[in-house]
Length: 129
Length: 110
Figure 1 (cartoon, helix red, strand yellow):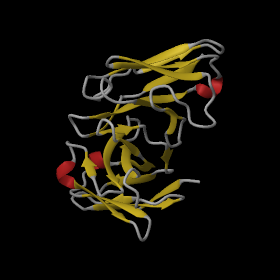
Figure 2 (tube, one colour; figure 1 turned 90 degrees about the horizontal axis):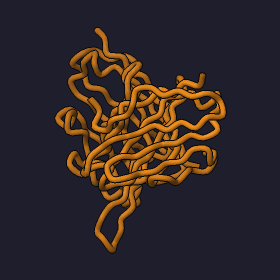
Figure 3 (spheres, chains in turn yellow, red; figure 1 turned 60 degrees about the vertical axis):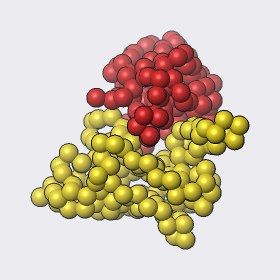
């Protein structure tokens, strides 16, 4: 059974760096098609995709936040860490990690992205001085 | 402003069939599978539909998905009160090299 659980600080001050950890269970990020992504949701607003890392070390980021985001995987600990620098009150949100696999079609050389099929419960982050 | 466009709200009475649309472009819906998510109040999103019209185990067959060109739709038949939730569409976007979401549709069961 695949599960993911987010952890990190609830309160951060403006300008600080946020570090969130996603602990994985039931799967490993050592396989190329396996991926773990981060998504956030400000209070009362829509989901916003942030970043994803795959087992082959491929990393992708939201262009609008690319300069502030870093996603890393620690296969030995079965964890994925997201850092977001220069935190601002507009970054106040619930942050989710999710299992996000992709499948490589050897005939076309194309990746197929099926969706985020298992989500963590989310962790709330408030940015305030 | 979300890359994928959804109506902000939808409604129906118990037993009715409702559809929620999701409009994108050639770089996302036009090139990749669409997935749909249901978010009940105060909970994490849950995958409802993937690969356009496939349902994960446990999702009732009242939920179905379709796609035409650069648009997709989620249909819910036999509407039930427990279907009252926010619904989001998503797809991979080649131009942005990442996932994009719709702005979400709040479904009210009258």
